Structure formats: C-alpha cells, structure tokens
Length: 514
Image (cartoon, rainbow, N blue to C red; front, side):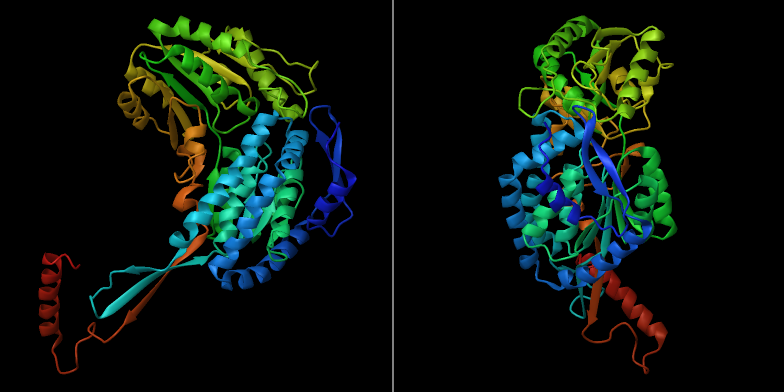
C-alpha cells in the first residue's frame, strides 16, 4: 500500500512552480500502479522561477552567514525527525530497498552537518600577498554565483538533489531544482522541510516536466548548473552552458572496476563486493560492474562471491527485510535484460541470477554474475546501471591495472588486499576520481571532507569537501594601494625607476617576499 496520503500530496504540490493546468502521473514502482498526479511546469514557469529566486537571492546573500546556517541546523533536525516519511517516499517512487533509502537520506544529513562546521572558514575573506608588501593589501572574497540550476536524477533523487543544493544555498545562492519527473516526491518533501526550517520564500524553486524541455530551460537560464546523469546528456549540458560562458559541475556515468589482489581475504572481499555491486539494485553511478581476480584464486573467489549473492534477500515492501529492491522503470529493466541476454547469446556464463522476477514486482531483476564476457558483448564496456557484474581473470598486477583503466569512464574503483600500503599503491594507479580500498564505494562517498567526482567521461568538478561549496562561488579580489609605488614620480627617469624596481624584485625574491 502506498504511504502517500492526500494531505501530504497536496502539501507537496504547492512547492511546484507551475502556472499551467497540465499534469502527469508517476508510478508506484513496487506495484506498477499510479502513485501521484503532479503539476507540470512550462518553459515560462522556469523563467518565472528564476526571476523569483533571483529577487530572493539578493536578500539572502546579504544576510550574515550565521543566519543562513541557522536554517540548516533546523533542517538537519527536521530531516532526521522525518526520516521515515522520506524513506517511504523514496521507496514508493524508486522501488529501492529500505536500507538503500536510509543510506540515501543520510547523505544530505552528512553534507549539512559538514558544511555547518566548515562553511564559516571556507567562505571567510582571506588575505593574499600584495605586489608590494606594506604598500598594497589584497583580500580574496567569495561571492555567490546567483541562481544555481540543479538537475537531479531518478536513482538517488533526494541525496543527489540536496547534497548539491544545500551547499549552494549556504554559499548565498538561490536554487532552481529540476528533479526527474518520476522521482519528484522526495525532493518536494525536502523542499518543504527547508521552508519549514525557515528558508526565505522563493529561494528554492522546483520545476517539473520533460527533461530536454524543462531541464534545457534551466540550463539556458540559470547562472551555474549542477547535473547528475548520463555522460551523453552531460556533454550536451556542458556545451549549452559553455555557449553562455556559465560554469557547470557534472557527475556522470561509470563502468567501475574492482581489483582483487592475490593476498586479499577472499571471504571478506566476496561479502563486501555484494554491497558494492548490488546496492540500489546496481542503479548507482559508483556501482562495481567489473571484478578482476588473479588466475590462481579466480575459482575460489567466484565460488565465494556466488554463495554470497545467493544469500541476498530480494523483496518488495516498506520494511527493512530486503537487501535488494526493484529497478525503477521498464526502461531500466529493458536495458538490463538486453545486456544479460546479449551476453548469454554470445557465450557468456551466468553464474547467478540472469532473469527478471515479475513474481516480486514489474521491474525486479535478480542480482546477476557473469563470466566469459568478451568485448563484443554489450555489457563489456557500456554501463549497464543495474544488478549485473562480470568477473575476469588476470595474470599479474600490471595487467589488472591496465584492464581496470581500459574505459572512457573514471568515476569509482575498488582494490581489495591485506597489504594496505600495496593496495593503496595499486589504487593510486587507477584512473578514477575515487578509489576505495577494501570497500565498494561508501568509504569515499561518505567521507564528506574529501572531494568526490569523476575523470574522463565521468564528469567535471567535485561535490563534497571544500570544492563542493566553493564551486558555487565566484572569487573576487579587492586590492588596496596605501601609497603609489607603481608609477615613478615625474622627476624620476623611467630608466632609473626600472633599475630600482629590478633591484627590488631581486631583494624580495631573496627574502622570499615575492
């Protein structure tokens, strides 16, 4: 039974910027039935949202940082208090297991508490060395971008929307949020929590509708763009933002590798890899889709891993009984089925899973383990974005690194081994924005002090850490000259002045002043 009540739905609809009578209906993923009918926005509504947000932003940016942070102290309290409602909405609109829903709502809580601690230091004015010590003073200021457009995906609609928009707001910006149409309920509830926490009116605008149309209008309107999604769409957004000379940060796709070293604890690595591969039914940009295992222990690891996969509890429902839930849509199910069927038809071996589970729900697919996967198969290089992983043997460490790096993507990777210094050295050789040692993804992603993002086709920019906040600011330098030493007095020949300045530069270098 859907946890969404008419009263809650009415509250959420109020948060949509829409002047049209157009609506659309979302799906309750566990059953395939109707979940909610929501207003649609038009491109005119996007412009209206931007204008309202822009007016509110000027007053917000003028507030002392302490006043802005007070809103987020209250939001953090409300989020944890309302965590069961957030989890209910996430499960209803995505079909994920409840443990995945709790993991998702924990991300904005971690991000909020991190920037509550760090924002004052990150945003404070900083002294910089002037051209002439004592004569010129320089301060570096951080000014907000203005109105930030956030386009968030369907797989982690709450975490990836609020993990990005929270630092944008703290930095003094307004936000226009465009969530995926199917998964708009949890972001709308988050917006309501922020307004209940005291966020000024109009500072956060939510627009709903077709991705290319409404998302495109956000890209063409806002002062900075944050996007999480496919590499193909990310490239289009970067090009459109570039036409206006507007900055953007993009977290895109991945074909993430895991390397098992020859000294790894096989049982522990197999158990950990299950979570790394099948969290959120594999619908996670950081999910592991390729595992490389030494020839000498390949069979032992494969046997241990398949046994662990066999223990996974896949089920529907709003309790904590399931380890793995459903895929989110018919489109996701189609892609996963095509990848597995193509691999099987071309000679791959299915060690576990390999079939949909309509007895559980319309979009369920079993956690699947493949071997004998070859480059001509769809799942070899393309991102499956589902509960499918392929095992590959390797001869030596150099080959493992080469195989792991054989991709245009570079988002996440894992290395498993008992010798931590060695595993860390292997990790440093991998072309990925985050590499976890003896873990699938959570160690790096959950460490909010560490910047997180991708290389290559996996994106631009970073979330989390200092960069996760400062990307939403412009650097402004204010240089003040106490007295003029940059131009010679009229009575001093410029040749003599140049010799004096050259000597001064030599002295300043020797004294490490310049």
